[in-house]
View 1 (cartoon, rainbow, N blue to C red):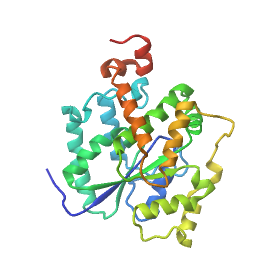
View 2: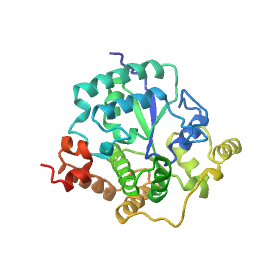
View 3: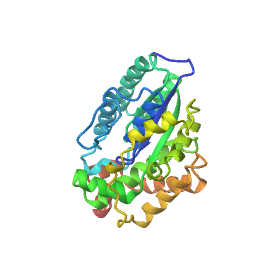
View 4: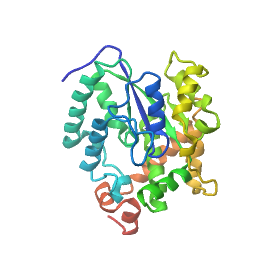
Length: 294
């Protein structure tokens, strides 16, 4: 298997769907990163998704292999123990290694954006280790009530299911990133103080761009379309979601998760072990618990 040992790095953009990952991918492309193989608007994102179709397809195959594709109620069910070591997942992982080895050789600044990364960081750790690539991470965070509102509108999803998905994506991203440095990018700051997010990103990436560079600010101004923001200030998240969101936002300035947040994620991981993965995959964790799954 091809191994790259030349000090290359890869940027992974994670975060729950509808949390600004596409906006961030667009911006990262402006900073000179190779982000996407396809540009242009999508039915649910007028500015485009700014992601690689091959990467999304790989991620979808991994989730489907565990019966956790997006349309399934089991999408957020507990993942099997050491799932990344399963033979079927390892086969997909090996395909991803070959795919990435070819692409990264031609690009000094390579990035992958996909919300599914939030769930699949363990397999990406293995991929990066195999290719001797160091990974940087940008974590896009958005107020849970606004993500829920957006998913209810786009996917006709029940609000309680959308809430749980927001929670699972964010908590698994925290579990996957651990205490490593991370650039946390609150969605709301793009509209209230975009220079704050620009400063975080350029500093984290050691970018030659200055956050106050007029050309960069003009580019950001063309990316951020305030007319596409549809937040509703009258909706509020449940207490657990509000607490997690607060802890995530607190991580934006230090660029690391607090001990409290890491303990919170670890406690939830312990809680998930109460649900047998195979039983939960049939119906989702709440339904499995209600049925008294053995």
